Each structure stands twice: as C-alpha cells, then as structure tokens.
Length: 180
Image 1: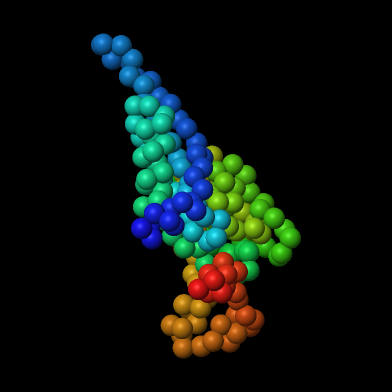
Image 2: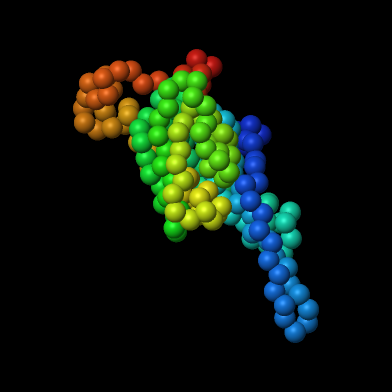
C-alpha cells in the first residue's frame, strides 16, 4: 500500500517520441521509442526508455522503466551541491550550482528532467551530440553522480561545516522530517 501512495504523487513526462517504419515483404512495420521522465518534484527522479509497436505501449513501458530507475537527488537548498558531468554516447551534460533566483538555465530534454526532479536553480551546458535520448540519459547520469555532502562528511568523520564551510540543507528532506 505504501508504494502505491508514493506513486500517486509522481508526475510523468514524455520527453521524446521517435517513430520508425520498416518495409518488409508483407508491408510496413511501424514501431515507437519513447523517452520518459518520472519525478515527484521533491528530489526524486527517474528516466526510462520504452519501445513498442504503438506509442501508448511504448509510453507505458518507458514510465515503468523510469519508475524502476528512480533515484534521490541530493540538494543544497534548491540547487545541486557541486558541479557534475554526465556522459552518454556522444552527449555530455554539465550541471552547475546556481544562486537562489537564477531559475533553470537549460533546454529541451535536460530542462524537463531538471524540472521534474525538483531543482529550481541550476546552470547547465550541453556539449557534443544533440541526440535527445543521449542528452536525457547523460543528464540522468549526471544526477546519479551527485554526492550528498552529509554522506561525504560522515565518511571523513567531519561535520558538513568543516567540509564545505557552511551548512547545507535539503528543503524537501526537512519538510519530510517535520511532517513525520
């Protein structure tokens, strides 16, 4: 029951739909590939790809894959705690922290994934291939490569203030703790 309630809060977005047609002896075979993003706008996000003969079937598979791949994104206020890079194929995505009020400086697939993850202030740079699938997966890889400063401080047996020089708070974690 608990898992189902959590899934009700999730927002699903179709980032890209690609249709292909193949000619065979009996006629044409069409298929679809869909890149989907799923998130709760509170620091959880997942990206998945679905393939099927029809678009609704591909969307269903993509959403299922995205839910299966969901991760928690460590935040510093409403931005990322440090600069990070993600790669997939020929696409490279750079994510940089931004000051409060900056907004989301990103475009296309990267913007959709960042919005759905709950990040409000970030600077991004897309390098290399313009393939939407690779850019989406590179962005997701960059989010996976983020480190939580609290975990790093605990591993080094230091406080976050000693490590970074200031306190770092995840507003969504704080809201969960207050609600509990």
